[in-house]
Length: 174
Ligand SMILES: Cc1cc2nc3c(=O)[nH]c(=O)nc-3n(C[C@H](O)[C@H](O)[C@H](O)COP(=O)(O)O)c2cc1C
Picture 1 (cartoon, rainbow, N blue to C red):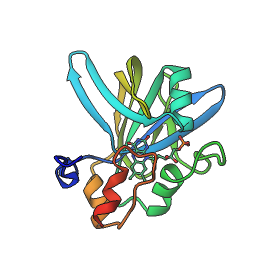
Picture 2 (picture 1 turned 90 degrees about the vertical axis):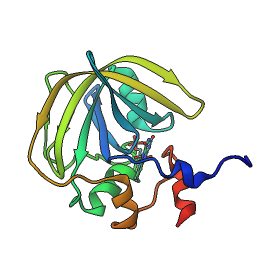
Picture 3 (picture 1 turned 120 degrees about the horizontal axis):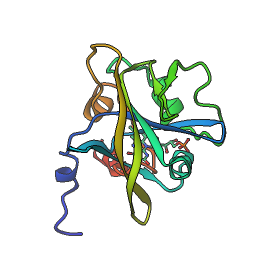
């Protein structure tokens, strides 16, 4: 791909989120940087998550997801629990403070400044990932706090991205 300079792609900016849901009694969530608001009327957001992830399977089954917005002070252990481990092996919500939205998705209060619940209204299937478009049904602002950006995660926290992240290639720049 001679005409593609990955540095240009890594100039995109993102926040850091936990995309979660609940299905058949199983709560699960995963770290994702690929989340954004796409329209205001109706109020819709999009998240892009890997087909191999348990979260993706559960979001597809439930037809709803939540997004919790991480604070800059979030410890790496918390990111590691949601971003480098699978809910197939551990209970990611054990010991985590959250409240359930009316739509039945968990809104995480630990290390998250705000969260919202969305009902899936459209999906776009890519070879590796599914882009879920959700209409927001509920949102909660927990507290005023500096928020974690994807760039801070790499530069301040010296974090990496696992293979399942759409921006995996970012690691090659370091
Ligand atoms: C900084 C960071 C960003 C990530 N961004 C995404 C993302 O946007 N989409 C995605 O599918 N996975 C992303 N991941 C990877 C998932 O969080 C990871 O594969 C997780 O273990 C999946 O868990 P699950 O199987 O319990 O759903 C990211 C991980 C990190 C650490």
